Image: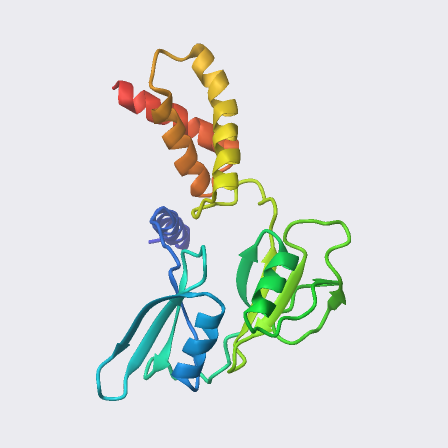
Length: 231
C-alpha cells in the first residue's frame, strides 16, 4: 500500500470520527483537602451532584457550576496530579463585571477585570492589562480566581459568539436570537418549497447550528432533511 493511500485512509478515518458527538462533561481537579474544596465550591453556588466513597479511603465529589453542562470531580485516590496543578479552566459569562461581583460576594478572591496586551496566558499574570477590552469585544475581557489549592479559573466574557460556534446550553435570550435567525433563513426556503411543517426544517437548522455549522450550512441541512422526509 502506498503512503498516499495510507494518508487518504487515515484522513477518511479522521473525518468519520469527527462526526461522532464527543461531549466534554467532566474536568478533574486535584485537591489536597476534599472537604475544604467542597465547602469552597458550595460557597460559590455550585451544585453538589454526588459525594461518593468506598469506605477504604477513596472518595470522589462531583459538582457543577450554575448553567454549565460540564462538571468537576475532585477527591482522594482519583488522580496522581499535584494539588493545584490545573490552570486556566474557562468559565464563560455574558457580563464579567457582574460575575466578578457575584463571586466576590460568595467568598472568592477574584482579580480585577483585565484584557491581554498580547497573547493569551492561563498561568500567572503575564500579559495582563488592567481594565476590560477597550473595544468591548466578546472573548477579550477576563477575570480570574483560584480555589484553595491553587487550581485557577479564567472568567471570560462572551456577549456574542463567533459565527458557527456551537451552542448546546441555551438560555432564553440565546434561544430567542437563534429562533429569529432560523425564521429568517427559513423564509427563502419556504417561498419555493412544497408544503411542509416548518418545525421539521427548524429542528434540522437548530441542531446544525448547535453542532457548530454556519447559518448557510444549517440552511442546507434543513433543506436536505426536508428532502429525506419527502422520500
